[in-house]
Image 1 (cartoon, rainbow, N blue to C red):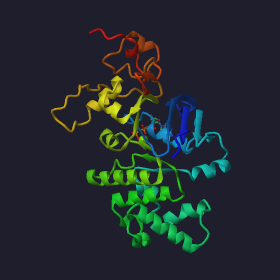
Image 2: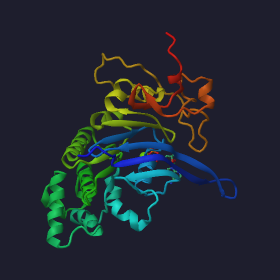
Image 3: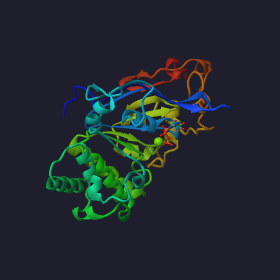
Image 4: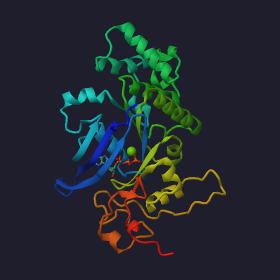
Length: 331
Ligand SMILES: Nc1ncnc2c1ncn2[C@@H]1O[C@H](COP(=O)(O)OP(=O)(O)OP(=O)(O)O)[C@@H](O)[C@H]1O
Ligand SMILES: [Mg+2]
């Protein structure tokens, strides 16, 4: 495994959705869904993107996959810029980045048998020639996600939720992807099934050197499987750190508030409680300065006018976007 360059690099990515409004229905506003996001992921690494509903997590995934075109910024896969590729040139890159969504029911064609669901990407990307080769590859994929080979004749509804998600993962692996974007991939599953799918993902990561972009609002799950975490608020990353640092010494007031809401496994362990009040402001008209200032208990004048940049704090790998950094501790 070469660490020389990240598999995925996302640089100042923006996605502003136009929204129609006004009496004439003209384009009057924009949703600043993703507003300048920078991160990278190495082979074999999991980066989790967390944050409240509507902060732009899925939009980050969709723009990387080019399910929607970015407004601005750059995306590189294995060193090749992909955000501006034509559909034809994007195709071979698509093979290398696949997605697993929350609801396999809506992403798996209910009228297709598992065999055909898994054969489809192999055929579409021209990866197999003969029927027997397809059968072998499909059987191999079933093994990889620990589903019985003889289940290939069944339809999605004949499987449990966890099994369906295994099929979704197998389909993502089929074309030989090296980056898998998991968008709330385990969020709808029961706790024990969640754990099984998370374990499967980490086993597959070890086995295949997969890079995972794990989008989730579930911090307890993230803490189990991730290497690094990016915390998003209203279209921006407010904190980025390795797992241990983020969960043991969160820095940004928003991260601290998010973590306060997660049950602590050890009830005697102390974690400073910070309760988030108020709703997330609209991404159509985000607050000036620091976007979190309207909900931040520590906000001072500067936060209302000047946007804090994401910058290294202490350890180079730990980044936070908060003006409090610049204020010397008083006590
Ligand atoms: N196609 C679209 N057109 C206009 N606005 C959109 C579109 N898709 C998403 N948005 C808006 O962009 C913002 C970010 O949405 P996104 O789905 O990325 O959030 P999220 O963090 O994934 O939320 P959740 O946790 O609920 O999945 C939201 O305000 C959403 O309403
Ligand atoms: Mg989402």
